[in-house]
Length: 279
Image (cartoon, rainbow, N blue to C red; front, top):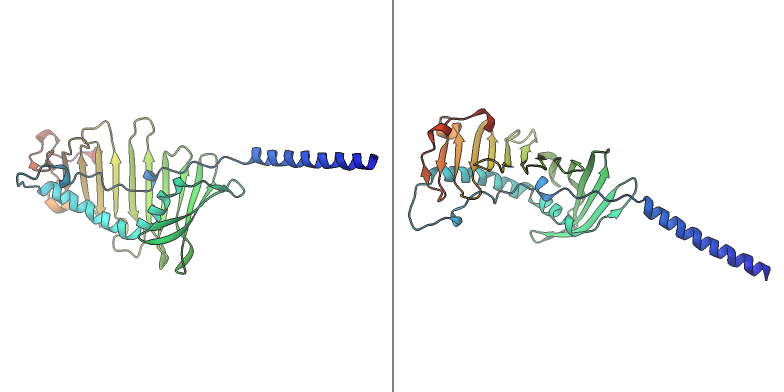
């Protein structure tokens, strides 16, 4: 009888110890880092005014808007070819729950269908210090490639800044594009810049920057640098009116403006010269 009581007591103690260890491990498990917002990696080129949003009843001269639109379209094509897959894969991550690994690391693991192909995605979040953490994405696709590191980034925990580096492709695994993101959480100003960093690319050091400045008349902008030529495009996101400055194309440093119907109009003379704050 006494032996039975001893064994029973030991059994109870073992169960209680197991529960204690389980609870303790759960309590010691850190919280996963919040995924950086998609806007810290994804350059939204759809914000620029299009002819779909204006009246087509009257033919008009739209040289200024058209030059701006074609400038942005060039980058849109470049990004669609080279970074669309990893960006789309990352955009899917917020729909999945991470699993804790160890040492503060978390893994988001899921499948993503992109351009009629199925990719296996592993997104690893790792703490760096009290202010920053690292995100690294690995993609696999059938028998084509496995665990290709498509990008890695260093992000502030408050999401006020991020720096990403994207590799070109599994067939050409070189560092290709750097993405820098900054956001002022108080006034909602934000900007993101894509820069070509592959020294073997003809457009190395070229970049496009998109920004929002809610307190200004022209509250959105693109700044495009291509082989040393700078194009500055600004517009109002409500009225769609805007302006462009491109010395390489227009051969001067004067603004060219368009109205809410995207038609060419004279710029106000007091704002027609390039000022230092827009560079």
